[in-house]
Length: 213
Image 1 (cartoon, rainbow, N blue to C red):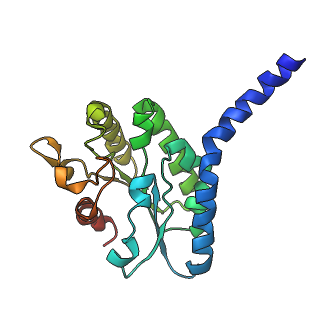
Image 2: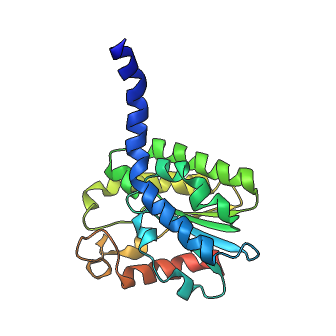
Image 3: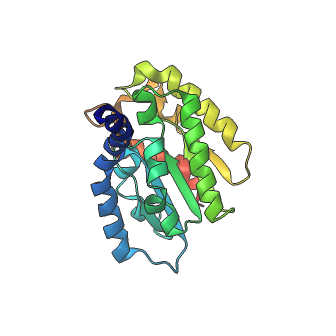
């Protein structure tokens, strides 16, 4: 009987461990925007993993728009799906920028699985509003994860093909602009070789602003 109980409990324990590390950060995001988000204004959501979370100056570079940054560090596509209400749907956005896949590939997930989860995220958004504009930001090239470049490029190709199937779905291709002589630029990352500095975010801004303006 004890073994049966363990078999029943273990899957739930595993799921809890996968999700619970993000709960505190999700709560902080909600608390922040509970006080400053204006439901009467159109909203643009940027969400995903730490490359979004650390993009601190989004409200300054898009001053004419209400921006919600609900990125949470270390997240993968399945985490975003789990917290989709708190990070996207509760803000009724007209436009959503999503950056997921970077950590998924690093953790060993196959591009096909990542795309399947991404489709679920898209479907949830469309169930709320069929005309919400969704931009899937390409997985970025980085110094610290350059050994996985082929898998990232494979994922990006799948994302790009997915975006061609829907008029409200766009591919934010930031891959090539972050390269110099076919390798990641050295001057756009902080010391960990993974996260970007202001120069890196400037490149993203000049590429992605077309989807807002």
